[in-house]
Image (tube, rainbow, N blue to C red):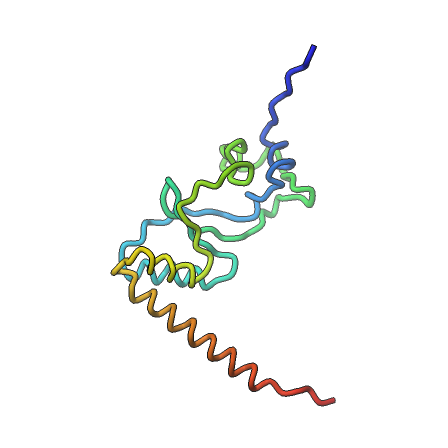
Length: 155
């Protein structure tokens, strides 16, 4: 007789399937950007390493790479089953790392934001998009200058 395969609990799913990836960042819901200042603030966020912005069926969110201090080297939670309510309420079966990610888009850089604003032709974001493009050109000029100014090291 074939024995039914027992369902995995949250702890097992987190260790075996996603390897604790959701314990390496935090996500905070943010208001839908509606004006120049909102787009400029998103640009500021994206200028920082480890920060991204996404939109899904629940709305916009800010994501910050930040490893949980309770995550062990083997990807298990060091305080399980006494972990936070937020973690307990998380549906491991529908984790974005164990199934398809249902995002409309995910912005990781200022350039991603400029591309998004350009594609959407958002008037309220036009100035931010232009400022990003100018900054990109300036960054490229500065990089070329830095390469020209490099001098061989003399010992």
